[in-house]
Length: 285
Image (cartoon, rainbow, N blue to C red; front, side, top):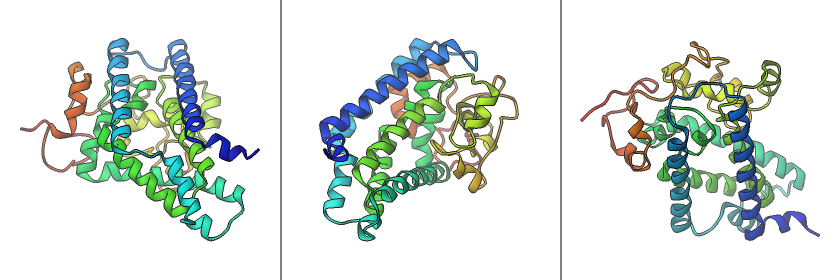
């Protein structure tokens, strides 16, 4: 049996992604409830209801706007002989492994771009405007950012000629790591120290959600931690410590800003100028 072809059929790919998502979300929710890193400041049910509602909105928008999946597109690209690994006739294992690594690198640079370009920051700041930090923070992305990110992934898949199974694995890992490294989870220091050499742990990525500009503009990786070290954006710890650091951005500090309706309009609210330094935006007209 061709297992790669079997798991990348639309039905099986969707089921695998959904199963992994629900399973990892449940495990992380239990672990952060049992071993919390920070005291929660906002009602958890209130945040969860609104953050999860945003997930459903994003899913509906994607289905309406993009009728084909990234996995289907990868298979189509292979049939058309598009992309580097198809043109080089590289061994399947090499194309599989390198595709996952290079796709993760692409997402690292996409993340930096969304911080550097003012109009893109307007979209991305929704992700940073959460006033608490837990597993559902990893799901807080504006629908327009989701669509733009998907467009970047389509371009990367077409350029690389990434195998469909590698794209599916990348998507599962990316979603799973986003849930993992946004968890309000206190890990043993030794375990965190070992894991952060290879992957982005909650303590690594939490620094990126600090209100402090220099800390916000660090630790952009989602899965592999090597990119931040390689490109000089790695910061080991927040200056105020994980329990003392302030999460979020200055522009949206009210609990009402966490409502779904407020989240959807956040890109169009606030000062109209460029983002100046880090996340220190000031309210405007």
